[in-house]
Amino acid sequence: MKQIAVVCNYKLNPSRVGGMDRFFVAYDRACKNNGFRIKWFFSDGKIIEFYQDLDVHIAGEENLPTFFLKYHQEHKFDIIITHFLELCTPIFKKLKGNGKPYIIAVDHNPRPIQGFPLKKRIKIKLKGRLYSRFIDRFIGVSEYTRHQILNDYGQGLSSKTDVVYNGIATDVYKKRTEENFGKFIVASHLRPSKGIQDLIHAVSILPEELKALLKVDVYGEGPMEKELKKMVADKNLDGQLNFKGSSPDLPNLFQNYSYMLQPTYMECFSLSILESLASNVPVITTPVGGNPEIIVDAQNGFIYEAGNVEQLSTIIRNILQKIRAITTSVNPVVEESYYLEKMVSEHAALLDF
Image 1 (cartoon, rainbow, N blue to C red):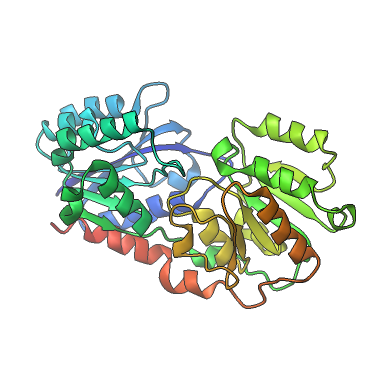
Image 2: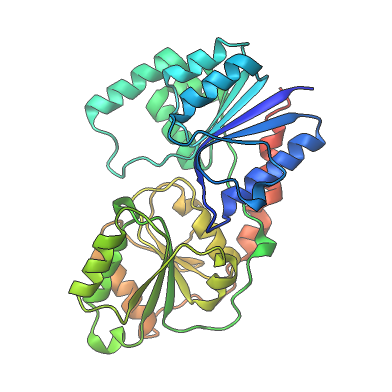
């Protein structure tokens, strides 16, 4: 019976069970049903009831790759799968040297919108030369991600680099059936790259009569939370933007809104976008990362240039003035192409080597 280790630079959050959590549990079940033994290694957090059937190990304050390497040296896994870890680092050479496991590296990591500085690009390319040989398969979560892997680490990796799109449990999300005019949702980590500061500026330049029609609920936590709340207070937008923190009930909450706002600068393939569409809620976002692979302007959302506050404000203004709207159902694309069972099946197929 082959043994699998899944190593995730991911924090288990007791306050929310999200799309990746559902994938991990479903993938664990699929592996066991196919005769594998599987253990999970996470960077931080607490083991919650949702994970009760998984064999979970948490690094906590210890560096995750170092924590796992020590475990692997004793147990010698046959297959190692990484999620959210930096690719082509020395740790992969060390892992390969202990029992020669088959290593699959799944890349969820977004790149800066302007690309990396020259010095970092050279360093990344060198890492590709030195350490890519120790990774058997590279998996991008979008075509954008696959392209970035090859661009970063070398076109020579093309033959062992594939795409497995993210997927979600579509039946978990309650569908919007009413217009919910003027109500917008943000579901995002609160850090600069997510662009919430642009949204605040965009709302601040709306005419006062339109501000009165607008309500934006922001779900999420992060290092920028205090700064964003101060921006809202300074611009007298407390009536328009409300910070709700993390919520375990997001699958039931999306249905209460007319649009999701995602003013991001960096993305690979957003689970939040899939969650919103699954709830029949169109998405206003930027054409970064894999976003254009799922959002088609004026069909299931609106796209504007990242960082362009005026464009974002104009889209919101046009919606509030009923000049523009998405009136067709937007959930079919997720239910047909980006569902959890497909994601699990395609990841499980990687084990047949």
